Image 1: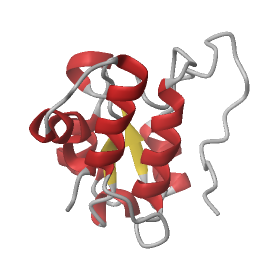
Image 2: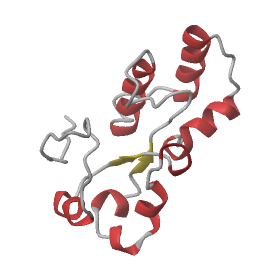
Image 3: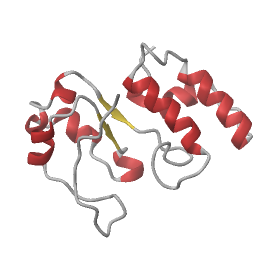
Image 4: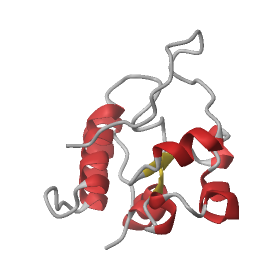
Length: 134
C-alpha cells in the first residue's frame, strides 16, 4: 500500500536526485525516511526541527525516520544481503500493526546469521534510532 510520492525524472545521479523543499511540501508525504546526517550526510535532524518543514504531514505526525546505516544502509546502496533486513524494517516502520515484529530481535538474528556478529540489544536499539518505538 505504500506509494513513493517523490516523482522526479531519472537523472545521472543513480536515484540520488536533489529535490526542493517546495517539492516535498507539495507532495506532503505521510512518512519520510531520511539518511543519518553523521554517516550519510542526510538531513533527518533538519527535517524534524526546521520550522520550514513543519507543515508537512510526516513531520506533524512525528513520522520522520532515520534509515539504519550499519554496517551498510539497510534500504540503499550497496544492494546486498542488508536489504533482507531493510525490507523488514520498512514494513515495521510503515505498518507496525500489520508487521508487528521486534526489530531488535530480527536485527540480532540477522547480524548473527549473515555477519557473524553477536550484537547487544543496546547496540541494535542505537542502530534503529528513532524508528524503535517499543
